[in-house]
Image (tube, one colour):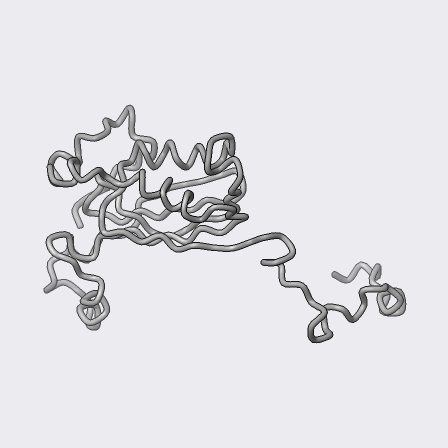
Length: 189
């Protein structure tokens, strides 16, 4: 900006000058670069160690399905089994990822303390006995095999056997030394 390097006269002489503006001549980036997305949703918690390993595998890009499907961006919120009171925020971009502690789930807060309008917003999302706890992630990239990517994400969830053992057991799945995300909640929701 303000460098004086742009020349409208030179830009008008470029062979692709009006291609982007002409109807039917623009190739969407989704087609040109093979970019697509998927949404992952589940009402089961993630096993923190399995999720940490999967995120590292995505970055390494050496194991199927991530040797052929390149994840460029992933974001959303997730339910980690060892942090049942708090939602976690997941973000992956390029060669970095983070899973950080977010706000408490509404299910962890006494409904009498909810702000006005929350009950109406949360009711469609509510599933007993865990309330609004769930996974909701969007994954963007060159997803050659979306079903295999979904399977890899599903493999991070608790197994049925682990899920049946309940929240007290879930808190023992990792120790502070083995927790890949190591963010301890502060205070009570």
